[in-house]
Amino acid sequence: MKKILFIASLMLVLAACKNEKNTAAQAEEEGPEMVEEDEVDVVPNSTDLDFDAAMAAYRKKDFEKASHYITTAIDDLKKDGAAVDAKSRKELETTIASLQSLAEKVKAGEVTGEEELEGLFAHVDMMTSHDYLLLTQVYAVDAPEKMQSAFRKAGERMERATQKLDGEAKTEGEKILGAIKTDLGKTDIKANEIGNAAGKRVEEMAGWIKMHAEKLGIKEPEHSDF
Image 1 (cartoon, rainbow, N blue to C red):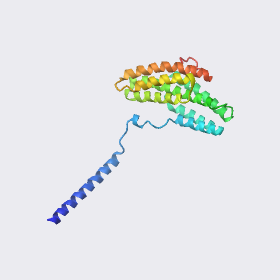
Image 2: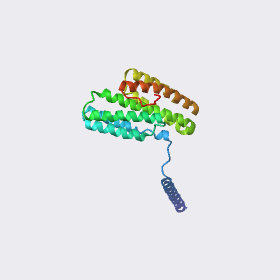
Image 3: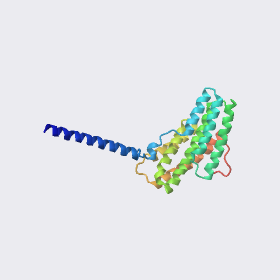
Image 4: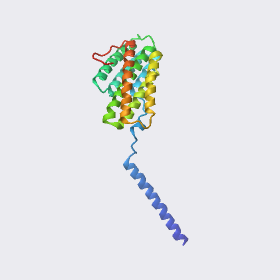
């Protein structure tokens, strides 16, 4: 009797092992579970990494390397794809031209201090934030499932910019950022409400960008509403 019970127990163990192997094999065939975009999107923006590397090299007085990273940032900025209309693309072209000029000045050792780099890097962040706000408005109508992610990215880009700023530019930027954070904190907000909120922030950002561009000496693109 004991022998029979032992054999029965052994068969149950073997069956359990077989089931475990089958389950593992099935999981392997099916591949990893897909994760929502909002859970994945925690990787730093490429342009951020380029600017950080450029600033680190500049502080070490390796001007050639700093210039190289600014040029890399230009390439990554072109690939970003946030600019959604002709005005945004035109403004992006103007900002890229300023970055190219900055890269040449850095390489030649003609930049007088970190403030000049920080100011332009912040401007790029704010421009990208503005474009993500426009994208939020588009998604509110065409792709509501992507809308909140674009709105969040707008806030992230603006927060990145305010960290580089000081004085009035920082104060005004933080006001807009605070409004975005408030909107993002609402759990019951509807798609059209987010679209309207993004629209208000776009208007506020337009004034900020124009003012900051003038202080940096960045020429506004022709026929621009900024």
